[in-house]
Amino acid sequence: MSKSPEAMAESMIANMKDKTGKSFEQWLAIVKKTNAEKHGQIVKLLKADHGMTHGFANLVAHKALKSDAGSASTVDLVQAQYAGAKAGLKPIYDALLAAAKSCGDVEVAPKKAYVSLRRGKQFAIIQPSTKTRVDLGLNFKDRAASERLETSGSFNAMVSHRVRLETAADVNKEVKGWLKAAWSEAG
Image (tube, rainbow, N blue to C red; front, side, top):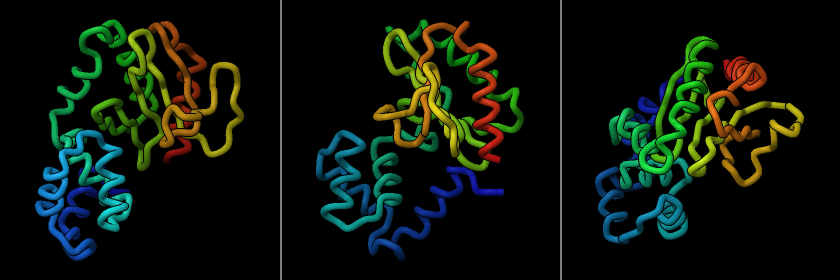
């Protein structure tokens, strides 16, 4: 069984000084001095200016911004995603989460902007992308796009396909079938 994302992060933090020459706390201090406020800015800075690998830079950026599941309450992360103008989208999230959990063992890992669904590896993400739409990102090894199951394009590089959902009723048999297939491929 593969490690959870939290266990992998703990391992990376424990090995950071040996692998990068500086401790985790030293990297956080470096980031704080830059006043960078966006994840991508921090990753780019650490990679370009300090030669850090993407994995370590990504971890430091998440921890510096407290945007990973380990730095904030997972309930708080999901509540923040569906607050304000996006509050009406929460039933779509709930329907997708129920459909995913009906597939079998699913690890739910909220991030700042989306929720990652894992089974050994990530097979889907749920993201409230606009005030009127939730995007379901799915990972498939080899599946043709269709009118509704589109390629992910610039949506998110962590998934291969995207489905746009505007109501909980959009989480229909077809969407549940795609979730099940992505879950199966991840196992």
